[in-house]
Length: 203
Length: 156
Image 1 (cartoon, rainbow over the protein chains, first blue to last red):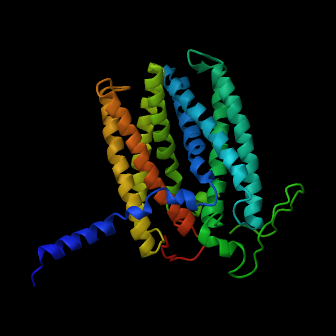
Image 2: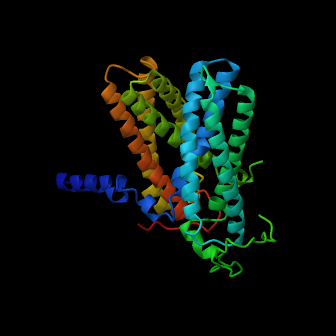
Image 3: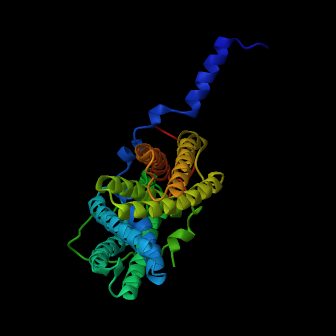
């Protein structure tokens, strides 16, 4: 069997189209998500541990350059925390969720606001420095470590909401709203009143 | 300690935050160093770039490891996972080149500085497009999650 050059070129074009579909570009994911909170959460999650690592090296080894880089990471982490908290607060009503997700979301929100306060404290503390080393360096490291732990804990909670409970995951909407199984009820927000935690356990 | 992490199908979602934030942070710090002509910012940018490069290597390695096992339909694999992988491998190539360049003329190359900054921005753009594909897999197709039944077929 012989293949003509024309057929070969057509096959190559078709193969290229399979390999690279340009219609998928244009940040469609950003347009399709329920909210932009997931875009900003990367910054505190990555930058607080980096700040801790660099400040730790800088303070313990008396390495000035590491303290400078740690300070840069801390400032970027704080900016990221502000963006994540603001978009998170805006996001809470943008996707359908059940009581279980709502319960997790309240804790996630409280920790997020606490992180904002702690990061503000750390930034102010880092300004009070001598040769890039914060005053009371070891207590500073302890507060930074506690902040990093809280960030990771909150990220874990956010991950559970998305990956396990399906919060803001489009195909999970029918599961969350009870179209499959019919035992779940969509949560409506009444933030003025305290709500009871769900009585069923996480699985 | 971290119950959410125990439920994940793979480690990839845990590590992806680091290259995204650190490489963007490094690019921002390099641009600031260039605008303010600041050595201090340049040193910080260099350290953050090296950390970003290391974390990117880990993210790519865990991504390649996760590729076979992640529960997504063939159509999602074809339309989203494959371009995600290609963009992130391209990001790794660019990042390796920039890191080697920065290491050889640390902290901020003087010769070809414009090209260095331009390539930093190209790397960030390629990574952002790649991350967008990753985000679609998670939020549109529950990739790596257990909230809904697979396979979910790709729809544009």
